[in-house]
Length: 337
Length: 256
Image 1 (cartoon, rainbow over the protein chains, first blue to last red):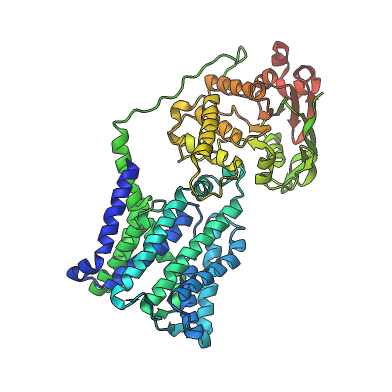
Image 2: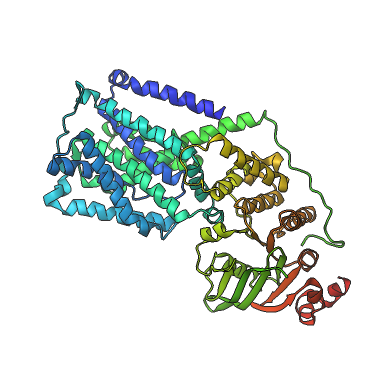
């Protein structure tokens, strides 16, 4: 039943997403903001793979986002890469970044993993910030979006959203298959209890490394697409503030759930957009929301909702009974050891 | 006499200045039940952790099935046929008993990296093995409940079943009866007997309760303050004067 509920929710969401270009103008929402929601949802999904399904804290994840954006931008600028190849090279840049820092990150767990990752992320930030000749430094770099024409179909500003939606759906399907596979179950085992996972024969370092690479690839894709959507790459994309925002979206929506990160990104990006134009202190309500969420609903919006549904249902269902203890073989005179 | 399946020579482990285990050697025959016993702080668990790869020993050599595994990573040891439980049940608390066991079974069948779904015939073999494990520890009724919701004794049984899921030949149980009530202790003892008699496994377990050990084990090693005090059959151990004085106490020993 939970599975069917999820399917229905996903179907409704997909239909809504298809009609966003028609709906958005009526509620005074720019379509570019909707594209942003999709791409940050993709990044949050990547973070969710690590936080919600593997149990490591990727607090420097924006490095992968930024590497994707810079990878796409630099290859367009210097090598005149096409649309898809610039995205592919952005993903590759992000993967190379993950390959480089992964072996160091794997030496630690928990909060030290998170701190190491922030530090490595900042290294990429400062590289983008300092190498002004190539990256444009603090000002960032503008680049043009390569023209696309497939069988008479042209990529324009109006249909760019649909191109991104296609990427988003593909990533969503891949993510769903991944977390429900034996591989996903092994990752979940590491999140639940890494020592036990090791004593079941899992090479946990290798699993975490693979999860990190997959996450980096997804986030690199999100970053490359985001770069192409605003035709701009800037150092703050790589910064730990951006990492924090993406982690916040994931936890707000519900880490360890499939639709949670999307909901988190939706609230965060649109909330940001509306609030920042309305009040100058827009970060305060956002921070308050996050505090309430972490203290009151650590499973996020979707996770808490699923718990409520489950509890209501289990009230009616048959509860399996514990098997009876049989006491036959204890030596005489034995009491509690 | 059976073959020696597991052997440790001169194992030492220090924590800072504390010598938790000092120059302990151990030989385990295939198909036997071997107990490591000693009072609190004797170094039982430390020795156990050094033998099973949780710690690296500071000195000594561990051999399993003829291979030197002193520095082998844990997953290699499991592949070779070692399984273990922990003093505080080490389980996947938020997953169901079913999933807890499935993860180990998939690992043993080299399916852990698989992304495509598992085909029906293979899935069926795995499910059959899973049901056999559930029956072995009598947890079929709780198969779909999160392990965290189960009673302490059932969690322990689930952990034992998990350690069996990887098809081990040697099972190491760290204080399997710790913190359990009378009836639950009996249940675990039954399971340990079955591990030996029905599955033909070699069992090593740590326990501080002398009565439990004397009634279960075929060979016993007594540790005291990090050193080996005595080693032998239950009869030899209960006759051993040093053990009697240091550990059991005269009155109890006479009754046994």
